Image (cartoon, rainbow, N blue to C red; front, side, top):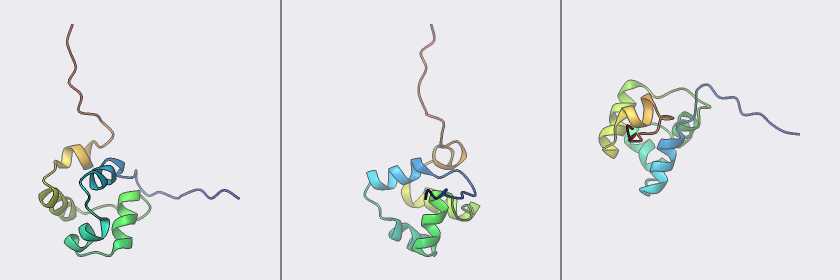
Length: 84
């Protein structure tokens, strides 16, 4: 039997990959936000509620990242295009 994951919003795959890249554990980020590990994991994977504006601010300050790149338009690559 195949189970389909019910998502409330798109997962934050770019944020998840970045955390792995800089070796920041989800449990540490959850502690920074004052939420449980499970709640953070559900928010990142899109299966729980979405991040609040205050949580986004805390994450961006803590990780020194842009909300545009990781939360507003996470699926859009920041590629430089060459004009012909």
